[in-house]
Image (tube, rainbow, N blue to C red; front, top):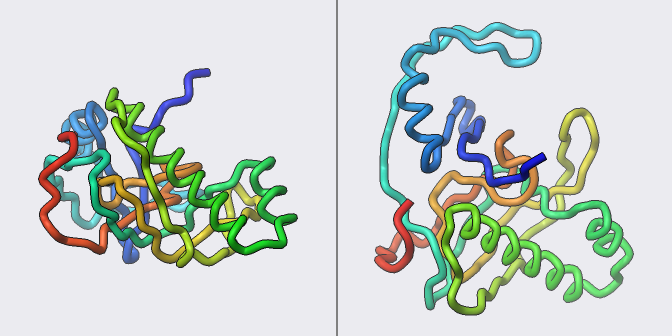
Length: 185
């Protein structure tokens, strides 16, 4: 199997279904989305009340200053091995350090998926994240909500971490200053 960053992501944000298309995923969504008149969610058939398409260019990549993001949905950061490390770690600073390494890895993976090479060291601060319960395919998992800071630009409403195509790890930038550096997506 080939594992790659999902170019199409489904999310429920503020009680509305949202599809995000990145790169070639945006072209596919633009072609198909307006033809959709109903959707099946679990066993329930839902009529599409309104379908709109918004296209925008997003900038991503490493920058000099730290940027603050808020998770709109639980971030599934930990694989089985990291979750065991996180739970057995008594020192809060070590737990935060583990999350910081994971979010940096998530951003590096995002960059790599779009053929961008990060040219300098990423720094993160995950001290404002808090654990939360999450469900994935009926299985209870450890997720995280709150804010984090990193010197990397991410497009609003994309996901980082595990199961981003299902809406987990969706971020919103809280620093609305104009970040001109980065790579256009």
